[in-house]
Image (cartoon, rainbow, N blue to C red; front, side, top):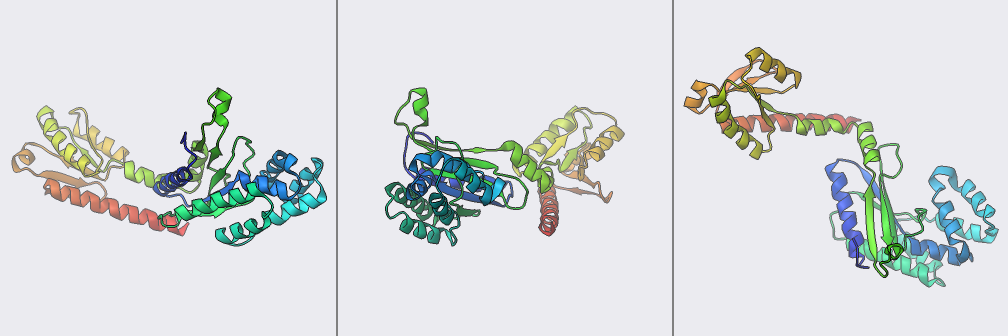
Length: 321
């Protein structure tokens, strides 16, 4: 989102992230901080000139631990008193509102720090009436080492998988200046497609996607006249979100049935001359071998019932993992 400093943009991005991961059925936590808070931290520690060194070190906290972060800060000639103040802030406890209130007190003499607190509080105020499903957590240890961020910064991670951040981004007020476009604020996010894929693979979530994408009913091709008639039925099924397929050629029945078996299609529809005359469809249940005639409305209801049952079974299995 380019061209506006409004914090509503941050909230919109957060809504997008929430919707994406709800659709993917991933349980995630959205961690948020503000670079102005990190600047305020450096200021109250008496090390404003070392802000980049401080943020780069804090960014490694999850990977190397607090002791190693402190060692790195010492190697950058940051004083023990400054490190003690940094550790105090990194150890903040409480809910989002409580942590912001504590920081507001600590930043009594830091205007930039107070500005960061104010911006984050505004974001949380905007979020309050919204139906956000994912956990949104103010994390003062979130630094993101890239120095072009100027305001909100955020990362998303999956709660149920061993993986780093799968989405990240933030506010960058001056980045376009590198390309000759000055005074153009922006905020953005990027989704790590490879990491999201790995997480979903880890959690077995592609089983659900396969369920949704699977062909539910296969139409045998008896010839051109019957195939053209079936196309109208396929169209109606697809309008009802039912995946249907017509064999492209009038091949031998055995070949077509083997094809349906190989693709694990649950129902095979046979529409010949008698079915066309009666406006019915002969439907074979491939699991039981039972075959019955029904109209289009009954076929839609039958397949939707099967999809619902299979989805419930999948969700029950997923819930036990």
